[in-house]
Each structure stands twice: as C-alpha cells, then as structure tokens.
Length: 219
Ligand code: E4P
Image (cartoon, rainbow, N blue to C red; front, side):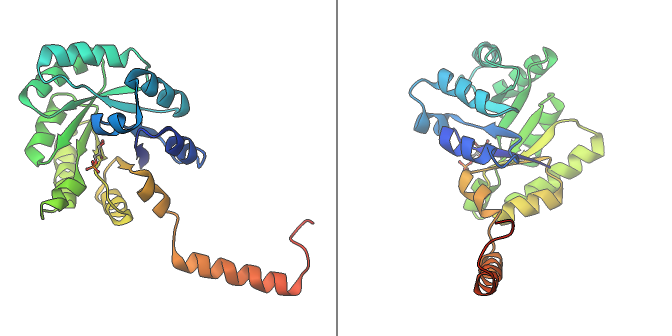
C-alpha cells in the first residue's frame, strides 16, 4: 500500500516527507494554481523534495497537444507521471504515450467503464475520485471495489490510485478493498495518526511518571 500526498503546497510536502511515509505526490491544475506563480519551477521543487512519483496534469484537450504537453512535462524528471483526463482524446493519447514508455495517470475516473478503458489503454495509474462521487450521493468506495475486481479478472497492470479522499475512513476502506495507492490531502494524512484515547493514555502515563520520578529516562 503506497501513500501519496494530494497537494502542491511545498511546506506541507516537506512536513509530511519527514515522516518517511510519503511515496509520492499528486497535483492537479487547481492545486497548482493555488500554490504556484511559475508552475514548471514549482513542479521541479516538488520533485526535489519527494523521492518518488509526482503526477502533473496536461491542460490540453486534444490528443496531439496532450502528447506534446506530456512529453514536455515528462522531461522534467523521470519521477514525473503525466496525468491525462479520461476522455476519448485522453484515451488515444494514453495509448500512444504508454507505447512510448511515458507513464500516464488517467484521472477524473467516475465509473467502472472509464476505469476499464483506461487500464486497457495502458495507464500506469488510474485515479477514481471517491469523495466527488460521495458528494453527489453515490458510493465512491463501491467504484473501488468494482475496479479492483476488473483488474484482478484480467490481470491489468495499472495501479489503482484512490483519489478525492475526504477522511481516514475513505483511506482505510480503500486499503481494505485493495487500492494500490491512496492519495491524501495533508489534513487527512495527519488525521491518520490521531486517536483521543492515545492522547488520554499518554497524558496519564506521563503524569504518573512525573508524580513519582524527578527526571526522564537517561537524564
Ligand atoms: C487526484 O489526483 C486529485 O488531485 C484529487 O484527489 C481531487 O480531489 P478533490 O475532489 O478533493 O479535489
């Protein structure tokens, strides 16, 4: 199970990387537009911090321009994974790029049929958006279950990257269902560590120790 951070914020990435738990980063045009004045140098900075795959999305909508942008983005670093939206043009571009060994993350997946065509086109990652499906009163996690089954049935090699994660329960459920990767917004990443009983338990241990002994261990 790999954990990616879903942000383009440099400070958040640095802080999370210090835990040793971050395997990669996902960005999208919205996240980059919130953080960067020069997107390309910003991406270079992210790649320097994260020793792992960094997804960066094209902004073109036709196959030829998607491929041109994908080649440009992928030359920034071998760690770059090009994000391509699941459209007819996007699938054609994915097939072409994958044949030429450029790794593609097919994004904005909201149905099992979209996931299947993306896997068949050679996507390196596919990104189903769980939270946005829940937002329209449907079941995002059900989609993960379906995609995992389709991947297993046919031995597709694309990794399932559960995206649009809104809370730790999404993270745990996606892991249980067999998602290969979950990308977490920083807020949810830090929530993974928290439990009120841990805080209460730690306070009691330290209070008991300090009421009996003057110093900490080794001092
Ligand atoms: C995934 O790669 C996307 O950047 C992201 O998970 C979208 O999440 P949102 O629905 O919270 O915007």
